[in-house]
Image 1 (cartoon, helix red, strand yellow):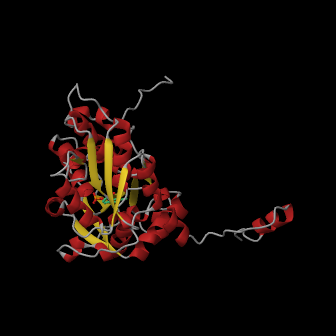
Image 2: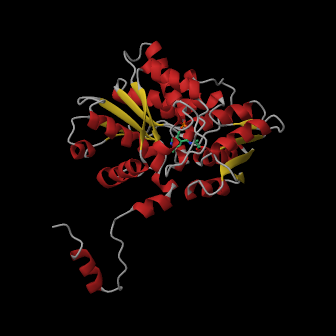
Image 3: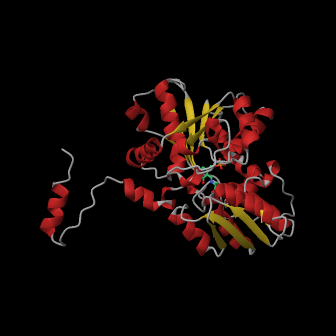
Length: 360
Ligand code: F0G
């Protein structure tokens, strides 16, 4: 049979598990259904007997996991008659909000920290026609402003404090379970506002409560060490990291995330920027998988915990890669050590370039 059903996005796919009715007009860009890739080469590089899967969320329509929540949030905003959405963002939420607003034919206002969002994300917000408001402050200040202004203007907040966002995002856990026929032993994620780790736990718990899985994973959240309020046990006022997507000191889902850690018997830990960039490079060079720096935090942290034995050999691990590498070309090019040659346009010059750079 050469035909298969037209995939129309995750709300349609999980209609009975999401807060929509038959009459709800769905705003979708075909999000979800992302690849779950087994790492073939990195376990050998580590010299460890572990089964690591990558949930490649950078392959969503706007290049990040945010689309899972945004399809729900914008669908519900439109259903409720909203004509404009607003968010604060380190870049990916704004790109996603802008795209789904365009799809819905409503307005988007996005607040971003000036100079601290990756180029690809800025391009997306601008191309999709959002009103981009750069603030001379960081994400946390932007988030507070969004909450304040929403009380004075007819706009729907689509940050992950919007409960429909987490509903959409929980579907990533469903997809993982369906492909593995079980839950992994450990699920590792980068943590910023901690919405995504919370949403995944909701998804696993829903399948657990319905008897679809017999056990849930330990949820492990990793932060960059310059931006690690969950490690400090308190809010951080001036977060800094190369992983700009998770440059967040005041996580919005603080209490929920601590609960996830307790219930799943998981933990939080931190990685240095150097470890994050090394993991990003490892994935790109050894597996052909390109993610943005923040995303690589999940693998960087997992590698630390595999090496220390906290994640034991024999484990099945899923690491979520939250955003695509093309989002942040500047950081990628800056740390790339691949040879970049400029030669004359002659056969001799090109042949020499090849022969001089062949591995022995
Ligand atoms: N990874 C990426 C690539 C992100 O963009 C974000 C969050 C996270 C991880 C963390 O997810 O906040 O649910 O813990 N980005 C938000 C944004 C803050 O504005 O795009 P979280």
